[in-house]
Image (cartoon, rainbow, N blue to C red; front, side):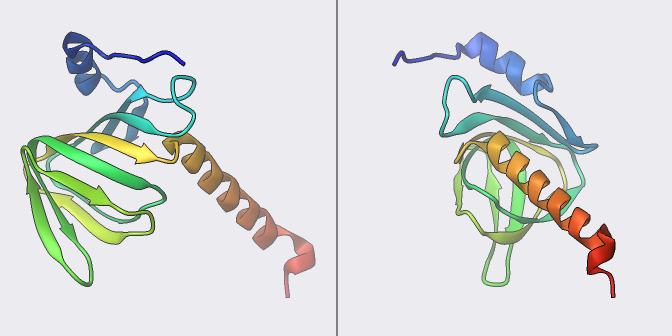
Length: 139
């Protein structure tokens, strides 16, 4: 299996172009490494605009290397702020609120493959909705 490289000039372009798309109005995600390059993990850039705040239950293991700005993680057991140069590990199943006043950009790596995980979450939600709207299950 061959190795792959994303050159610095291309990586800089990825960080500022929504290749994967805008998740919502304050989250911009690009994927530099994904299927078919890797069938096991995803890597790319995430930019959170100023004022972003959201509670998340992580569906994957994730490592973030902060390139600029700050991001505060708050859970029941701890709270800390990641800054430029910091590396954060977010284990699968982590429940926390993520917020940034100034915005931030990070390089991320997820395992397993992020898109497959998001697709599985979407399928599960669709199945739940079908179940809830099925007349056979109404009381």
